[in-house]
Image (cartoon, rainbow over all chains, first blue to last red; front, side):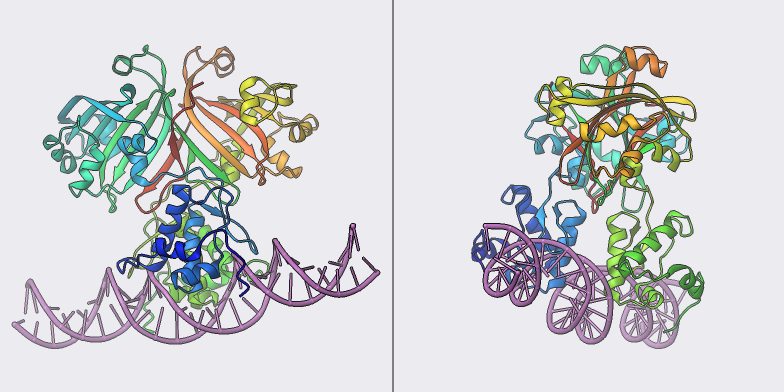
Length: 270
Length: 270
DNA sequence: TAATCAAACTTGTATAGACAAGTGCTATTT
DNA sequence: AAATAGCACTTGTCTATACAAGTTTGATTA
């Protein structure tokens, strides 16, 4: 073991890393730790990670376990590298976690902007035909509708039209929807929001959009329609969010090795 | 081994599966085979896959190898299932391969539509400031510009404004750009197009867009701006594609376990 | 000096075994 | 009949070992 002088202190690394929490498997702890180092900027794009054998020694794990952790990061697109070469921190378009992507509030905070909202309407009414179809409801079933204007640093940025299934929406009458994240609140209340399907297109601003966002009717808006469901597949929310394209858009990165989860789909002609 | 009657013929499966190609590792062959079965519809959403031990027997591999293959499919979102339960085919929004996502022609074919194109302009000129900035070129450097109208089943669907770096674009003068996929042609010629970064937003149709697509000026269009680069990071293409939102949009799926590669980013204010 | 070769790394593939932990069925018990 | 306990089966975690294959490095050779 020739042990060339490493570009960081192994013992120091060790101190930081391993707070051996018996509740999580080793490979997850190691993955979380490496992820955090990359996210925090401690390891930058192109930097070499410690070799597998070094990591084995550091966390006192077998090579299989270390490789399991590295495979996880690889599948997330965080590290790259081929046979013979130690893995390096990938050219990083940080992919967003589920809740960062699902919650406007969390997203805004993650980019260092202050989120805001103004609730225009909170109502319980029969779902219209589009909503009923998307949520798989009968024509006479009711939903909780929320219409909110979302702000970024006090500036209008997005109009949100959410429709919640009754079991989840009921809880909203006990919530000040001007105070923050509905997504966060519902999760705290134990609602199982764990899957989202998003469709992105462009629409012209209608009168409501125009008034709330302060633009002319017909202005192009970037629309994200979202169906949120539980782990078991029950649909809990259908939302139609319209962004000012000057203020937010969507981005994805794609390589020939690493296929993207984003897909371009033919629009259902309605 | 109690061997309850399986819902498929093991020996038959075996015949189909294993054409033991020595050029590829076992875990990749198994993954490709399982992927193909799911894609072909032989195994449908919710169907149980054979258990790990059954797969071991079928492909004559150790459990580690089988688990490696299953982990690959899991990371692609194709299968789901937890401890104690055999894996099942996931609720499937098939993620698109790199080339399907990058190439309009391949995409159209993959959804059973016929792609078409009409080249409006093919020119070699100095890059304008936006293009130069995006491609990292000096102000006086030239690019090859292509303006094409793309068709889906003979109907106008998208306006494509591509800018190619000279080394790649040169080849286009020997190519009939009305005949098909530029992406496919360049790859055949050995151009290393292996990374794409996509940004999606909404814009109003300008006069050119309006005329080509047959809509009014100001109509909302769904815009995808794309930077294509080589493995090494040289930027080879910058494209601005504008879709009729009635005809194509973008979709993504997201779970709390499986983070999406799609991200919402603040627009650069230009 | 420059090219070449070999050794010492690195990661990739594959196997075998052990135990933990969750699920579903069955037979027993209540 | 319903609840319970146990068993068989599943996947999850982890270790240890071996060899293949690509990369880097340094010493040897021309």
